[in-house]
Image (tube, rainbow, N blue to C red; front, side, top):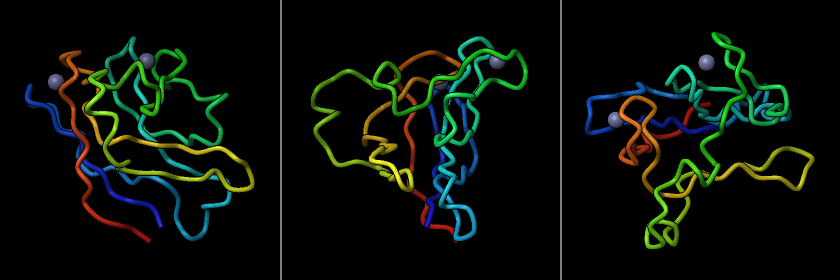
Length: 122
Ligand SMILES: [Zn+2]
Ligand SMILES: [Zn+2]
């Protein structure tokens, strides 16, 4: 049900495989999604369905999820293309969406991070 994404940047940053969305046993209350701690320059995976309480485990700062347009390359032509990933928060009229665009790299702070779809899990 979820998908596997891998984030890669020209600076050499590599997130490794990230398990995004939810699995068969937890999709009702879980949407694992990438977020960034701008204090620690770290990309982390947190439950978007509980984003109100999502904090960095290291510094306790609030996190910015990667659906936030401040983390997207603002070029309009990048935003018109299809979504890479859309997840409906179960029981709510809310969605977590990742457009197929470039993203802020937590390491070099350029809009040069891309997420590659590596297939489905669960
Ligand atoms: Zn932090
Ligand atoms: Zn980078």
